[in-house]
Image 1 (tube, rainbow, N blue to C red):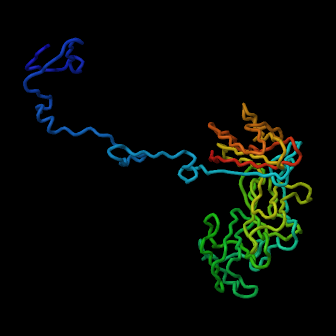
Image 2: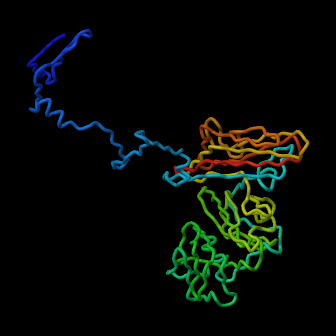
Image 3: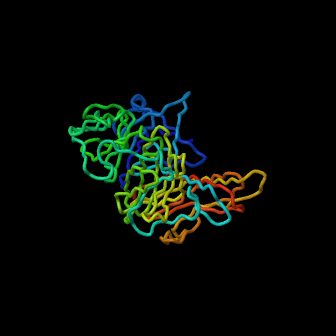
Length: 412
């Protein structure tokens, strides 16, 4: 025991406090009044002491508290993909696609509604849309112009209104509630909305136009919902030869093919019905194909409102990450058959080099009248311009298969 009174701890020549060494078996007892270099006694220091605490701040330096339950911190964490789905991550968007084939047989087939091998376009081109039904899958334009840029709305429209002083919306054929307004159907930013109110020169769309578009100064057409019961208007999302994103809205004319106005379609990434009659779905099968009618690039089965194709091309300046793939295969009862199902792309798996028409598998499974969820702990990364699709073959000629893929697109 070392007892020391009147201890003065100064500094050395290096301006650092002197250390007081005590052996590991000894102890140091300091008696008397302790005085600091700032002139406070130990009692004064204790009185001025501030309890030690932790302060949490966000990226802006703002402090925030932590909820507690019975004195314990209450912590809640959200997965990264959930934040993407909620729109909390800048330049990220949730992505999903699903495919179905009514025939998965002995030969390899891609998983899409038309069945068989899917052929990607080799060049940008004009395409045509056509239905197998010639009675109900017909859209009728009653105001405006669905194929040309000849009728434009007034500039005083809004997110929920379209006005045109030159057109009487109540005159024959009068616009009715439920009719479909299409905006710039073949322009840079096509949009649409559903009529909820009609006045002489103003149409109201209470729920707004798709993608938050405005009805001001837009080329437009109004499609009559009551004219036919099936699919009336189809929306196509596509990439041009530079892999930039575009869209077009096409008004169907039954079995008579309707050419797209745009002639730069290089990849079809999505096709869906955006306007119907009272039946709320197509009566026939809808195809988008080359204008010669010989090659189909996407397909909507009758009774469904979206093309179920497992193929996708990553747009320019984006990267696709796939986190989950669900495969399923079915066949007739009382039989024993299986299918080999796989996800593949035209990127070399090791170098990520773009391989054009050569595809490599990236994930797969075997199903026998069952489904399999492939949860990718490490997401599969697909660079811009990558073509992705799901494929398979079966031990029977009469199987069916589906696939669903989920992940996110990230702006480069």
